[in-house]
Length: 254
Ligand code: BTN
Image (tube, rainbow, N blue to C red; front, top):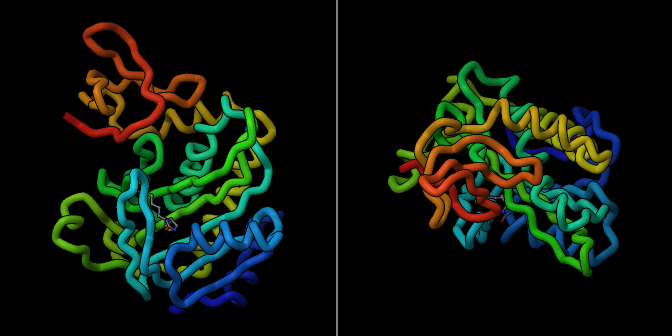
């Protein structure tokens, strides 16, 4: 079924996110669209969703594969700022919300690969890209981009070994309009918890769904056993030289 603003609106149970909504058949990047909307004074919670992207952007300058007709490419404008110390928690809170919405639809394991990937049966099913501007110690507004592989049945050869979709995991198609409404609701609830300062609860929930705990991993130059999540949202790794924290970088298994 195609993306439809009226269907999304009628399924939406949020307070703010998606109450201002733009649905596009095709665009460059919804993150760019949301940033432009911010400059045109769009309200906090404004959402841009596209059926296809020509310049879908992933983390670390990578391309986000964005064909039409199957998946969700969505960006949320968040105007509330965060102090620098809480910044890492925004991506983690969005990931938790995304996981809440996806896990209720799927039978198998749904985990979060720190900091921004959703793994279904240990393959990547979604990614998050938060972009922001900063003024001093306060960061924001934010554009929160989410790419979720929903009904895709085939991936390019380089993605096939590492990527999956909800359809591949569940053996059925999903209504993207209803799913989007659920994702926005779950993300709103976790992000609101962050702005209320409920970091202990977020950390406890995130830790329960953190992928690769106990595995040998590497984040850039840090190598060791993944222990868990630090209170500041960094990844704790037990290395030969003791416990260290990774605050950015790409997590890999070794
Ligand atoms: C990642 O590398 O895992 C993050 C992927 C984020 C992709 C989404 S799709 C919607 C939004 N628009 C973009 O250009 N990127 C994000």
